Amino acid sequence: MPVLQDILVAIRSDADIVVARQRGRALAADIGFTATDTTLIATAISELARNIVSYARHGEVMMRRVETTQKKGMVIIARDSGPGIRSIPDALRDGYSTSGGLGLGLPGVNRLMDEFAIESELQRGTTVTVKMWLK
Amino acid sequence: MEVPILKQGRFLIATIQAALSDADLLQLRRALIDKVIHFRSQGVIVDVTALDVMDSFATRTLRDITNVIRLRGADTVIVGIQPEVAFAMVQLGLTMEGVATALDLEEGLAHLQQRTARKT
Image (cartoon, rainbow over all chains, first blue to last red; front, side, top):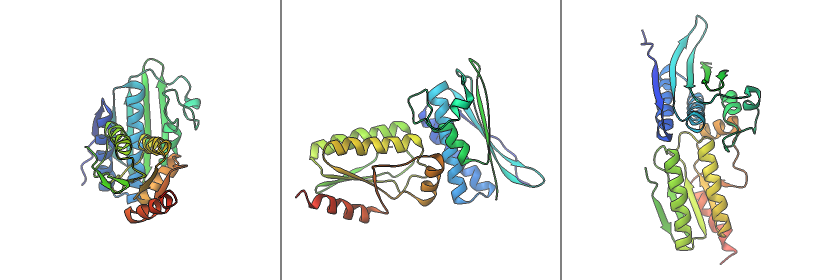
């Protein structure tokens, strides 16, 4: 019986981005993802954690395994209490950025993972939830 | 984690040995550009074999390094991008347009030798 333990990484600086993706990679490998999917997951975590550092400065990344009767996978929740996103459709458009970055953070993460959901409220913060399922 | 930079004749070889934070990448950029100027190097190889993730920041920093070094009249080759890493980069929408890449150190050196042969 596997332990259903959450991994929580506080994001306060760019060094924490590395910690988050390394712990996420370890969990993904433990769940049984292929090397390719493990890398996709680690890359998605890196982008999500980077968004926190760039836009909100502080936040957290929570990772855990998920299991339904049909499938097994991993969920990653990146949460911050930063300024929030004014326009989610804009933020999900390729090439759009308000931080002077490359502007492919969120649409890129959306392409890397199987499921993608975002909630954001101005002055309250942003939560991005992504999932990948074992194929 | 500082990236060691080796001088080999007209070329510099930077071998990344572990995961790099953003600060480490910026440090690498600074150190490489300083050394290219100091040694009047004609070519630079950045070996990323050990990188298990190349996200938007890493890609942009490597592209910046290449562009600055090109303005100094030298060439840069990125070698050793792992297949899974390459796949993730493409999914993410990252490209390395205008940046030379090669399979490994040996091919990277061959590329530089060919590129700089005309100059000597």
